[in-house]
Length: 112
Image 1 (cartoon, rainbow, N blue to C red):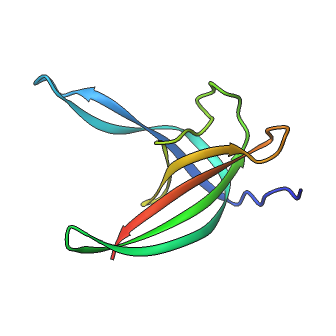
Image 2 (tube, rainbow, N blue to C red; image 1 turned 90 degrees about the horizontal axis):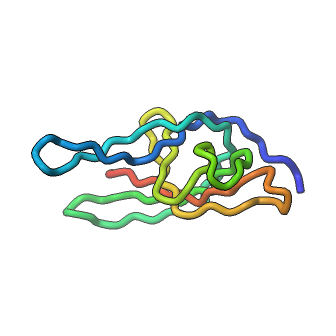
């Protein structure tokens, strides 16, 4: 296995609910740290949503491994941010038996 080319800096974010003071909540995204990553496009498609064309691309994102329970370990429903681009994590798997790298399967959606 060759080592991945970790050449893009992504910020890992997780959703957090905050009390809105009226009995409800609002959702905000909190940064959990930065990861150097290898980002590879997998498949893409376009669909209509609420009358708009939406381009959806799935990506394979490889980052350095982190132990279970560590806040640095990506999890489904978290996301990576690269500037204004958002990659929503769908699944995470260990890339190698030693857990040195993790593969995150993520989706990016853009209204066209």
